[in-house]
Picture 1 (cartoon, rainbow, N blue to C red):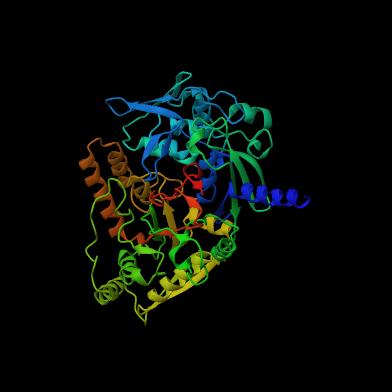
Picture 2: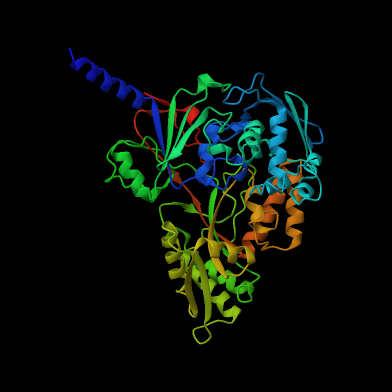
Length: 517
Protein backbone atom coordinates (compact mmCIF):
# COMPACT_ATOMS: atom_id res chain seq x y z
CA UNK A 1 0.00 0.00 0.00
CA UNK A 2 2.94 2.38 0.64
CA UNK A 3 3.85 2.20 -3.06
CA UNK A 4 0.66 4.00 -4.09
CA UNK A 5 1.69 7.49 -2.91
CA UNK A 6 4.94 7.20 -4.87
CA UNK A 7 3.07 6.10 -8.00
CA UNK A 8 0.58 8.95 -7.58
CA UNK A 9 3.42 11.42 -7.14
CA UNK A 10 5.04 10.25 -10.38
CA UNK A 11 1.72 10.44 -12.23
CA UNK A 12 1.04 13.91 -10.83
CA UNK A 13 4.53 15.07 -11.78
CA UNK A 14 4.03 13.80 -15.34
CA UNK A 15 0.67 15.56 -15.53
CA UNK A 16 2.15 18.88 -14.34
CA UNK A 17 5.02 18.64 -16.81
CA UNK A 18 2.58 17.85 -19.61
CA UNK A 19 0.75 21.12 -18.84
CA UNK A 20 3.99 23.14 -19.07
CA UNK A 21 5.18 24.39 -22.44
CA UNK A 22 8.90 25.12 -22.77
CA UNK A 23 9.96 27.48 -25.58
CA UNK A 24 13.46 28.42 -26.67
CA UNK A 25 15.05 31.87 -26.78
CA UNK A 26 18.26 32.53 -28.72
CA UNK A 27 19.44 35.27 -26.31
CA UNK A 28 18.22 36.69 -22.98
CA UNK A 29 15.60 39.45 -23.28
CA UNK A 30 16.95 42.90 -22.52
CA UNK A 31 13.74 43.82 -20.66
CA UNK A 32 10.14 42.84 -20.01
CA UNK A 33 8.99 46.48 -20.03
CA UNK A 34 7.45 47.10 -23.49
CA UNK A 35 8.70 50.69 -23.61
CA UNK A 36 12.30 49.54 -23.26
CA UNK A 37 11.84 46.84 -25.88
CA UNK A 38 15.06 46.29 -27.86
CA UNK A 39 14.50 43.56 -30.40
CA UNK A 40 13.50 40.04 -31.35
CA UNK A 41 14.63 38.17 -28.16
CA UNK A 42 12.01 39.80 -25.93
CA UNK A 43 9.23 40.28 -28.49
CA UNK A 44 7.83 36.75 -28.16
CA UNK A 45 7.73 36.96 -24.37
CA UNK A 46 6.14 40.42 -24.43
CA UNK A 47 3.42 39.26 -26.82
CA UNK A 48 2.57 36.49 -24.33
CA UNK A 49 2.47 38.91 -21.40
CA UNK A 50 0.68 41.85 -22.99
CA UNK A 51 -2.05 42.48 -25.54
CA UNK A 52 -2.24 45.69 -27.55
CA UNK A 53 -5.19 47.40 -29.16
CA UNK A 54 -4.47 45.29 -32.25
CA UNK A 55 -2.94 41.80 -32.47
CA UNK A 56 -1.96 39.55 -35.38
CA UNK A 57 -3.68 36.47 -36.69
CA UNK A 58 -1.73 33.41 -37.78
CA UNK A 59 -0.91 35.11 -41.10
CA UNK A 60 0.38 38.28 -39.45
CA UNK A 61 -2.67 40.36 -40.40
CA UNK A 62 -3.99 42.92 -37.88
CA UNK A 63 -7.10 41.78 -36.02
CA UNK A 64 -8.90 43.05 -32.89
CA UNK A 65 -7.03 42.63 -29.61
CA UNK A 66 -7.83 44.71 -26.54
CA UNK A 67 -9.84 46.84 -28.96
CA UNK A 68 -12.87 44.96 -30.25
CA UNK A 69 -13.08 47.26 -33.29
CA UNK A 70 -11.72 50.44 -34.87
CA UNK A 71 -12.81 53.00 -37.40
CA UNK A 72 -10.92 55.52 -39.51
CA UNK A 73 -12.22 58.88 -40.68
CA UNK A 74 -12.75 59.64 -44.38
CA UNK A 75 -9.53 61.66 -44.54
CA UNK A 76 -7.57 58.73 -43.06
CA UNK A 77 -6.23 60.80 -40.17
CA UNK A 78 -8.40 59.90 -37.18
CA UNK A 79 -8.46 56.36 -35.81
CA UNK A 80 -11.05 55.51 -33.16
CA UNK A 81 -10.54 52.31 -31.14
CA UNK A 82 -13.38 50.77 -29.12
CA UNK A 83 -12.05 48.66 -26.23
CA UNK A 84 -13.63 45.40 -25.12
CA UNK A 85 -15.84 45.55 -22.06
CA UNK A 86 -14.55 44.51 -18.63
CA UNK A 87 -10.85 44.41 -19.54
CA UNK A 88 -8.61 43.75 -16.54
CA UNK A 89 -4.94 43.64 -15.64
CA UNK A 90 -3.59 40.36 -14.28
CA UNK A 91 -4.09 41.61 -10.70
CA UNK A 92 -7.80 42.20 -11.36
CA UNK A 93 -7.52 45.99 -11.71
CA UNK A 94 -9.81 47.35 -14.47
CA UNK A 95 -8.05 48.32 -17.70
CA UNK A 96 -9.49 51.33 -19.56
CA UNK A 97 -8.64 53.69 -22.38
CA UNK A 98 -6.84 55.84 -19.78
CA UNK A 99 -4.24 53.06 -19.45
CA UNK A 100 -3.59 53.16 -23.18
CA UNK A 101 -3.43 56.96 -23.07
CA UNK A 102 -0.85 56.75 -20.26
CA UNK A 103 1.11 54.18 -22.27
CA UNK A 104 1.23 56.32 -25.42
CA UNK A 105 2.38 59.31 -23.39
CA UNK A 106 5.02 57.30 -21.50
CA UNK A 107 6.34 55.99 -24.82
CA UNK A 108 6.58 59.55 -26.18
CA UNK A 109 8.02 61.16 -23.04
CA UNK A 110 11.75 61.88 -23.58
CA UNK A 111 12.26 61.22 -19.85
CA UNK A 112 11.33 57.58 -20.48
CA UNK A 113 14.07 57.10 -23.06
CA UNK A 114 12.09 54.55 -25.07
CA UNK A 115 14.17 53.16 -27.91
CA UNK A 116 11.28 53.11 -30.37
CA UNK A 117 9.51 56.37 -29.52
CA UNK A 118 10.36 57.45 -33.07
CA UNK A 119 7.72 54.99 -34.33
CA UNK A 120 5.16 57.55 -33.13
CA UNK A 121 6.67 60.01 -35.60
CA UNK A 122 6.84 57.41 -38.35
CA UNK A 123 3.15 56.71 -37.74
CA UNK A 124 2.43 60.42 -38.03
CA UNK A 125 0.84 60.87 -34.58
CA UNK A 126 0.05 64.57 -34.12
CA UNK A 127 2.79 66.50 -32.23
CA UNK A 128 4.82 63.31 -31.71
CA UNK A 129 8.10 64.83 -32.90
CA UNK A 130 7.82 67.88 -30.67
CA UNK A 131 6.82 65.75 -27.68
CA UNK A 132 9.63 63.20 -28.10
CA UNK A 133 12.11 66.08 -28.48
CA UNK A 134 10.82 67.76 -25.32
CA UNK A 135 9.45 70.81 -27.13
CA UNK A 136 5.85 70.17 -26.07
CA UNK A 137 4.31 68.43 -23.04
CA UNK A 138 3.13 64.83 -23.39
CA UNK A 139 -0.47 66.03 -22.99
CA UNK A 140 -0.27 67.57 -26.47
CA UNK A 141 0.30 64.17 -28.11
CA UNK A 142 -2.48 63.38 -30.58
CA UNK A 143 -4.05 60.65 -28.42
CA UNK A 144 -7.30 61.12 -26.46
CA UNK A 145 -9.42 58.95 -24.15
CA UNK A 146 -13.02 59.94 -24.93
CA UNK A 147 -14.46 57.59 -22.33
CA UNK A 148 -13.40 54.42 -20.53
CA UNK A 149 -13.75 52.31 -23.69
CA UNK A 150 -12.87 54.75 -26.47
CA UNK A 151 -9.38 55.84 -27.53
CA UNK A 152 -8.77 58.24 -30.43
CA UNK A 153 -5.44 58.65 -32.22
CA UNK A 154 -5.03 61.58 -34.61
CA UNK A 155 -2.41 61.58 -37.36
CA UNK A 156 -0.84 64.41 -39.35
CA UNK A 157 -1.27 62.43 -42.55
CA UNK A 158 -3.05 59.21 -43.56
CA UNK A 159 -1.31 55.91 -42.76
CA UNK A 160 -3.12 52.93 -44.26
CA UNK A 161 -0.93 50.54 -42.28
CA UNK A 162 -1.55 52.19 -38.88
CA UNK A 163 -3.39 49.14 -37.38
CA UNK A 164 -0.43 46.92 -38.37
CA UNK A 165 1.96 49.31 -36.62
CA UNK A 166 -0.13 48.99 -33.43
CA UNK A 167 0.95 45.32 -33.16
CA UNK A 168 4.57 46.39 -32.57
CA UNK A 169 5.72 45.59 -28.98
CA UNK A 170 6.40 49.23 -28.06
CA UNK A 171 2.67 49.95 -28.41
CA UNK A 172 1.68 47.38 -25.79
CA UNK A 173 0.00 48.88 -22.70
CA UNK A 174 1.82 49.24 -19.38
CA UNK A 175 0.13 49.36 -15.92
CA UNK A 176 0.30 52.88 -14.50
CA UNK A 177 -0.77 51.75 -11.04
CA UNK A 178 2.03 49.16 -10.83
CA UNK A 179 4.69 51.53 -12.14
CA UNK A 180 3.71 54.27 -9.69
CA UNK A 181 3.63 51.81 -6.78
CA UNK A 182 6.77 49.80 -7.57
CA UNK A 183 9.09 51.99 -9.66
CA UNK A 184 10.69 51.51 -13.05
CA UNK A 185 11.70 47.88 -12.37
CA UNK A 186 8.06 46.94 -11.75
CA UNK A 187 8.16 44.27 -14.46
CA UNK A 188 10.57 42.11 -12.45
CA UNK A 189 9.04 42.41 -8.97
CA UNK A 190 6.68 39.85 -7.51
CA UNK A 191 3.26 41.41 -7.11
CA UNK A 192 4.21 44.31 -9.37
CA UNK A 193 4.76 42.58 -12.72
CA UNK A 194 1.23 43.21 -13.93
CA UNK A 195 0.23 42.47 -17.52
CA UNK A 196 -2.94 42.14 -19.60
CA UNK A 197 -2.11 39.32 -22.00
CA UNK A 198 -2.84 35.61 -21.96
CA UNK A 199 -0.01 35.01 -19.46
CA UNK A 200 1.34 36.73 -16.37
CA UNK A 201 4.84 36.87 -14.91
CA UNK A 202 5.92 34.36 -12.25
CA UNK A 203 9.70 34.56 -11.99
CA UNK A 204 12.94 35.11 -13.89
CA UNK A 205 16.30 33.47 -13.28
CA UNK A 206 18.57 30.53 -14.15
CA UNK A 207 18.29 31.41 -17.87
CA UNK A 208 14.54 31.06 -17.91
CA UNK A 209 11.38 33.12 -17.55
CA UNK A 210 8.33 31.44 -16.00
CA UNK A 211 4.81 32.57 -16.86
CA UNK A 212 1.36 31.28 -15.94
CA UNK A 213 -2.06 31.60 -17.50
CA UNK A 214 -3.70 34.93 -16.69
CA UNK A 215 -7.15 34.18 -15.27
CA UNK A 216 -8.24 37.80 -15.83
CA UNK A 217 -7.42 37.71 -19.55
CA UNK A 218 -10.51 38.47 -21.65
CA UNK A 219 -9.73 35.56 -23.96
CA UNK A 220 -8.94 33.19 -21.10
CA UNK A 221 -10.56 30.21 -22.83
CA UNK A 222 -8.21 30.65 -25.79
CA UNK A 223 -5.10 30.06 -23.67
CA UNK A 224 -5.18 26.31 -23.07
CA UNK A 225 -1.68 25.85 -21.64
CA UNK A 226 -1.50 26.67 -17.93
CA UNK A 227 2.26 27.10 -17.43
CA UNK A 228 4.86 28.48 -19.81
CA UNK A 229 8.65 28.63 -19.62
CA UNK A 230 10.84 30.65 -21.98
CA UNK A 231 14.33 29.14 -21.80
CA UNK A 232 17.51 30.83 -23.05
CA UNK A 233 20.31 29.19 -25.01
CA UNK A 234 23.62 30.60 -26.23
CA UNK A 235 23.92 28.63 -29.48
CA UNK A 236 21.51 26.87 -31.88
CA UNK A 237 23.29 23.58 -31.16
CA UNK A 238 22.52 23.97 -27.44
CA UNK A 239 18.82 24.28 -28.31
CA UNK A 240 18.91 21.21 -30.53
CA UNK A 241 20.63 19.15 -27.82
CA UNK A 242 17.99 20.21 -25.28
CA UNK A 243 15.25 19.51 -27.81
CA UNK A 244 16.53 15.99 -28.48
CA UNK A 245 16.70 15.34 -24.74
CA UNK A 246 13.03 16.30 -24.43
CA UNK A 247 13.75 19.39 -22.30
CA UNK A 248 12.45 21.81 -24.93
CA UNK A 249 9.11 21.81 -26.76
CA UNK A 250 9.72 24.52 -29.36
CA UNK A 251 13.06 25.93 -30.49
CA UNK A 252 13.55 29.56 -31.38
CA UNK A 253 13.66 30.43 -35.06
CA UNK A 254 16.81 28.74 -36.38
CA UNK A 255 18.52 29.17 -39.74
CA UNK A 256 17.82 26.31 -42.13
CA UNK A 257 21.46 25.23 -42.00
CA UNK A 258 20.96 24.42 -38.30
CA UNK A 259 18.43 21.67 -38.95
CA UNK A 260 21.09 18.98 -38.60
CA UNK A 261 18.63 16.15 -39.20
CA UNK A 262 21.21 13.55 -38.21
CA UNK A 263 21.65 15.21 -34.82
CA UNK A 264 17.92 15.57 -34.19
CA UNK A 265 16.06 12.33 -34.75
CA UNK A 266 12.83 13.34 -33.02
CA UNK A 267 10.28 16.07 -33.44
CA UNK A 268 8.89 18.01 -36.37
CA UNK A 269 10.51 20.86 -38.29
CA UNK A 270 8.29 23.60 -39.66
CA UNK A 271 8.53 24.37 -43.35
CA UNK A 272 10.58 27.53 -44.01
CA UNK A 273 8.16 30.40 -44.59
CA UNK A 274 8.93 33.75 -46.25
CA UNK A 275 9.59 36.34 -43.58
CA UNK A 276 9.95 40.10 -43.47
CA UNK A 277 13.70 39.95 -42.87
CA UNK A 278 16.42 41.15 -45.24
CA UNK A 279 20.15 40.80 -44.79
CA UNK A 280 22.13 43.53 -46.54
CA UNK A 281 25.40 45.45 -46.74
CA UNK A 282 25.76 49.16 -46.05
CA UNK A 283 28.44 50.71 -48.26
CA UNK A 284 28.84 54.13 -46.67
CA UNK A 285 28.58 56.74 -49.47
CA UNK A 286 29.72 59.46 -47.07
CA UNK A 287 33.12 57.83 -46.70
CA UNK A 288 35.67 59.40 -49.04
CA UNK A 289 36.56 56.06 -50.68
CA UNK A 290 33.05 54.61 -50.81
CA UNK A 291 31.61 57.84 -52.24
CA UNK A 292 32.80 56.61 -55.66
CA UNK A 293 29.61 55.20 -57.31
CA UNK A 294 31.64 53.00 -59.69
CA UNK A 295 33.41 51.31 -56.77
CA UNK A 296 30.08 50.65 -55.04
CA UNK A 297 28.72 49.19 -58.28
CA UNK A 298 31.73 46.89 -58.61
CA UNK A 299 31.33 45.61 -55.05
CA UNK A 300 27.62 44.94 -55.63
CA UNK A 301 27.94 43.29 -59.05
CA UNK A 302 30.65 40.78 -58.11
CA UNK A 303 28.63 39.28 -55.24
CA UNK A 304 27.07 35.90 -56.00
CA UNK A 305 24.14 35.97 -53.60
CA UNK A 306 23.65 32.20 -53.79
CA UNK A 307 27.19 31.73 -52.46
CA UNK A 308 26.73 34.11 -49.52
CA UNK A 309 26.06 31.78 -46.61
CA UNK A 310 23.81 29.28 -48.47
CA UNK A 311 20.78 27.63 -46.90
CA UNK A 312 19.63 30.53 -44.74
CA UNK A 313 17.22 32.03 -47.25
CA UNK A 314 16.78 33.10 -50.84
CA UNK A 315 18.90 35.66 -52.72
CA UNK A 316 17.68 39.24 -52.27
CA UNK A 317 17.69 41.64 -55.20
CA UNK A 318 15.58 44.26 -53.46
CA UNK A 319 15.65 45.52 -49.91
CA UNK A 320 11.90 44.97 -49.60
CA UNK A 321 10.95 41.27 -49.72
CA UNK A 322 8.60 40.69 -52.69
CA UNK A 323 5.92 39.15 -50.42
CA UNK A 324 5.63 42.37 -48.40
CA UNK A 325 2.08 43.74 -48.54
CA UNK A 326 2.01 46.54 -51.12
CA UNK A 327 5.42 45.74 -52.64
CA UNK A 328 5.97 46.13 -56.38
CA UNK A 329 7.48 43.50 -58.69
CA UNK A 330 10.43 45.69 -59.76
CA UNK A 331 13.81 43.98 -60.12
CA UNK A 332 17.21 45.45 -61.11
CA UNK A 333 18.55 45.05 -64.65
CA UNK A 334 21.15 42.45 -63.68
CA UNK A 335 18.60 40.17 -62.01
CA UNK A 336 18.95 36.66 -63.41
CA UNK A 337 22.20 37.38 -65.24
CA UNK A 338 24.90 34.71 -65.24
CA UNK A 339 27.48 35.50 -62.58
CA UNK A 340 30.31 35.67 -65.12
CA UNK A 341 28.52 38.55 -66.83
CA UNK A 342 28.12 40.30 -63.51
CA UNK A 343 31.82 39.72 -62.80
CA UNK A 344 32.72 41.37 -66.10
CA UNK A 345 30.51 44.34 -65.27
CA UNK A 346 32.18 44.56 -61.86
CA UNK A 347 35.67 44.69 -63.40
CA UNK A 348 34.61 47.43 -65.82
CA UNK A 349 33.09 49.45 -62.98
CA UNK A 350 36.25 49.00 -60.90
CA UNK A 351 38.35 50.28 -63.79
CA UNK A 352 36.07 53.34 -64.09
CA UNK A 353 36.59 53.88 -60.37
CA UNK A 354 40.33 54.07 -61.11
CA UNK A 355 41.45 50.96 -59.27
CA UNK A 356 43.56 48.03 -60.48
CA UNK A 357 46.34 45.72 -59.31
CA UNK A 358 48.81 48.57 -59.82
CA UNK A 359 46.53 51.00 -57.96
CA UNK A 360 44.69 48.92 -55.36
CA UNK A 361 41.86 50.06 -53.10
CA UNK A 362 41.89 49.16 -49.41
CA UNK A 363 38.50 48.46 -47.86
CA UNK A 364 37.73 48.10 -44.17
CA UNK A 365 34.87 45.67 -43.46
CA UNK A 366 33.51 46.37 -39.98
CA UNK A 367 31.90 43.60 -37.96
CA UNK A 368 31.14 42.58 -34.37
CA UNK A 369 33.64 40.26 -32.72
CA UNK A 370 32.43 36.78 -31.89
CA UNK A 371 29.32 37.20 -34.05
CA UNK A 372 28.82 33.47 -34.74
CA UNK A 373 26.85 33.04 -37.99
CA UNK A 374 27.88 36.54 -39.12
CA UNK A 375 31.45 35.30 -39.45
CA UNK A 376 30.41 32.94 -42.25
CA UNK A 377 28.62 35.79 -43.99
CA UNK A 378 31.68 38.00 -43.72
CA UNK A 379 34.19 35.46 -45.00
CA UNK A 380 31.97 34.66 -47.98
CA UNK A 381 31.55 38.32 -48.91
CA UNK A 382 35.20 39.24 -48.43
CA UNK A 383 36.46 36.26 -50.45
CA UNK A 384 34.27 37.29 -53.38
CA UNK A 385 35.44 40.90 -53.28
CA UNK A 386 39.03 39.73 -53.33
CA UNK A 387 38.36 38.19 -56.74
CA UNK A 388 38.43 41.71 -58.15
CA UNK A 389 41.92 42.86 -59.23
CA UNK A 390 43.28 45.43 -56.82
CA UNK A 391 40.63 45.05 -54.11
CA UNK A 392 42.16 44.52 -50.69
CA UNK A 393 39.78 43.89 -47.78
CA UNK A 394 40.51 43.91 -44.06
CA UNK A 395 37.95 42.57 -41.58
CA UNK A 396 37.87 44.73 -38.45
CA UNK A 397 36.13 43.07 -35.48
CA UNK A 398 34.91 45.39 -32.74
CA UNK A 399 33.03 44.93 -29.50
CA UNK A 400 29.34 45.84 -29.67
CA UNK A 401 29.71 49.26 -28.01
CA UNK A 402 32.47 50.44 -30.35
CA UNK A 403 30.73 48.91 -33.37
CA UNK A 404 27.53 50.82 -32.55
CA UNK A 405 29.40 54.07 -31.91
CA UNK A 406 31.22 53.93 -35.23
CA UNK A 407 28.08 52.95 -37.12
CA UNK A 408 25.94 55.76 -35.69
CA UNK A 409 28.72 58.31 -36.27
CA UNK A 410 29.23 57.11 -39.86
CA UNK A 411 32.85 56.19 -39.14
CA UNK A 412 33.05 53.09 -41.34
CA UNK A 413 33.31 51.98 -44.95
CA UNK A 414 31.35 48.71 -45.19
CA UNK A 415 29.31 46.68 -42.72
CA UNK A 416 26.75 43.90 -42.72
CA UNK A 417 23.30 44.26 -41.16
CA UNK A 418 19.82 42.72 -41.17
CA UNK A 419 16.38 44.23 -40.66
CA UNK A 420 13.13 42.71 -39.43
CA UNK A 421 10.16 44.86 -40.42
CA UNK A 422 8.03 46.23 -37.60
CA UNK A 423 4.96 46.29 -39.84
CA UNK A 424 3.98 44.71 -43.14
CA UNK A 425 4.53 47.55 -45.60
CA UNK A 426 7.43 48.55 -47.90
CA UNK A 427 7.95 51.70 -45.83
CA UNK A 428 9.26 49.50 -43.00
CA UNK A 429 12.28 48.69 -45.20
CA UNK A 430 12.60 51.81 -47.34
CA UNK A 431 13.01 54.05 -44.29
CA UNK A 432 16.54 52.59 -43.99
CA UNK A 433 17.62 54.69 -46.95
CA UNK A 434 16.75 58.02 -45.35
CA UNK A 435 16.70 59.58 -41.90
CA UNK A 436 13.23 58.68 -40.69
CA UNK A 437 14.85 56.04 -38.50
CA UNK A 438 17.52 56.97 -35.92
CA UNK A 439 19.28 53.76 -36.95
CA UNK A 440 19.63 54.87 -40.57
CA UNK A 441 22.54 56.87 -41.90
CA UNK A 442 20.66 58.75 -44.57
CA UNK A 443 22.52 57.14 -47.46
CA UNK A 444 20.12 58.91 -49.84
CA UNK A 445 19.57 62.67 -50.11
CA UNK A 446 16.82 64.71 -48.45
CA UNK A 447 14.54 64.33 -51.47
CA UNK A 448 14.32 60.62 -50.71
CA UNK A 449 12.72 61.24 -47.30
CA UNK A 450 10.30 63.76 -48.80
CA UNK A 451 9.25 61.20 -51.41
CA UNK A 452 8.90 58.46 -48.78
CA UNK A 453 6.69 60.67 -46.62
CA UNK A 454 4.52 61.33 -49.68
CA UNK A 455 4.30 57.61 -50.46
CA UNK A 456 3.30 56.70 -46.89
CA UNK A 457 0.48 59.26 -46.87
CA UNK A 458 -0.87 58.32 -50.32
CA UNK A 459 -4.38 56.89 -50.02
CA UNK A 460 -4.45 55.21 -53.45
CA UNK A 461 -3.02 51.71 -53.14
CA UNK A 462 -1.79 51.62 -56.76
CA UNK A 463 -0.23 55.07 -56.59
CA UNK A 464 1.44 54.20 -53.30
CA UNK A 465 2.87 51.01 -54.80
CA UNK A 466 4.35 52.98 -57.71
CA UNK A 467 5.91 55.55 -55.38
CA UNK A 468 7.42 52.77 -53.29
CA UNK A 469 8.78 51.16 -56.46
CA UNK A 470 10.54 54.38 -57.48
CA UNK A 471 12.15 54.64 -54.06
CA UNK A 472 13.24 50.99 -54.12
CA UNK A 473 14.85 51.50 -57.52
CA UNK A 474 16.70 54.62 -56.39
CA UNK A 475 18.00 52.91 -53.27
CA UNK A 476 19.13 49.67 -54.92
CA UNK A 477 20.72 51.40 -57.90
CA UNK A 478 22.72 53.67 -55.59
CA UNK A 479 24.52 50.51 -54.32
CA UNK A 480 24.77 52.18 -50.91
CA UNK A 481 22.60 49.37 -49.54
CA UNK A 482 23.24 46.01 -51.20
CA UNK A 483 20.52 43.40 -50.49
CA UNK A 484 21.93 39.91 -49.90
CA UNK A 485 19.35 37.51 -48.51
CA UNK A 486 15.69 37.34 -47.59
CA UNK A 487 16.13 35.17 -44.52
CA UNK A 488 14.13 32.09 -43.63
CA UNK A 489 13.88 30.27 -40.33
CA UNK A 490 12.52 27.00 -39.03
CA UNK A 491 11.35 25.83 -35.63
CA UNK A 492 11.64 22.33 -34.19
CA UNK A 493 8.48 21.14 -32.42
CA UNK A 494 7.86 18.17 -30.17
CA UNK A 495 4.97 16.05 -31.55
CA UNK A 496 2.81 16.93 -28.53
CA UNK A 497 2.72 20.62 -29.57
CA UNK A 498 -0.36 21.48 -31.64
CA UNK A 499 -1.53 24.71 -33.25
CA UNK A 500 1.90 26.04 -34.22
CA UNK A 501 1.89 27.73 -37.63
CA UNK A 502 4.83 29.47 -39.28
CA UNK A 503 2.71 31.58 -41.62
CA UNK A 504 3.23 34.98 -39.94
CA UNK A 505 5.89 36.73 -42.08
CA UNK A 506 7.15 38.57 -38.99
CA UNK A 507 7.76 35.21 -37.31
CA UNK A 508 5.64 35.64 -34.18
CA UNK A 509 3.64 32.72 -32.78
CA UNK A 510 1.91 33.53 -29.49
CA UNK A 511 1.58 30.77 -26.91
CA UNK A 512 -2.16 31.32 -26.43
CA UNK A 513 -2.82 29.73 -29.84
CA UNK A 514 -0.96 26.54 -28.87
CA UNK A 515 -2.06 23.41 -27.06
CA UNK A 516 -0.44 20.21 -25.81
CA UNK A 517 -1.64 16.66 -26.44
